[in-house]
Image (cartoon, rainbow, N blue to C red):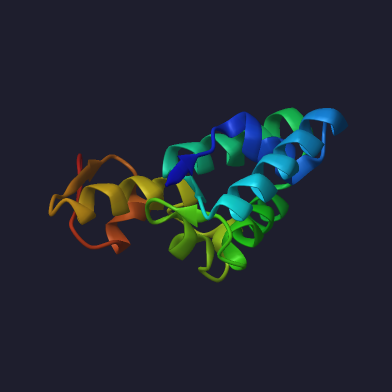
Length: 133
């Protein structure tokens, strides 16, 4: 069985705060592993965690992206979407379009669609229509 982790659990795993909840999150993952179940994280949770790390914990963009990338590295926790692949991109902290825009683009592209935006930096991605150009 797969078990989706929400943002509060992922934040506890990444920050270790508050300590009691972080310990409970780690124990929960250990229990999942013993049972043969698999924790998963959606792209929406990854995006929300990315912003929460920066705005509530004062973590830099690069460090937030690095922490999220490491979350998926060992394969114990799976990404349900494109986050794992996008987080592996070089220079992502300063990339234009940025991380969340790339997640959104990939979600639309995976469904065979196009993305419409006013953000000119997104023009470098496939299947994008930049409005007002």
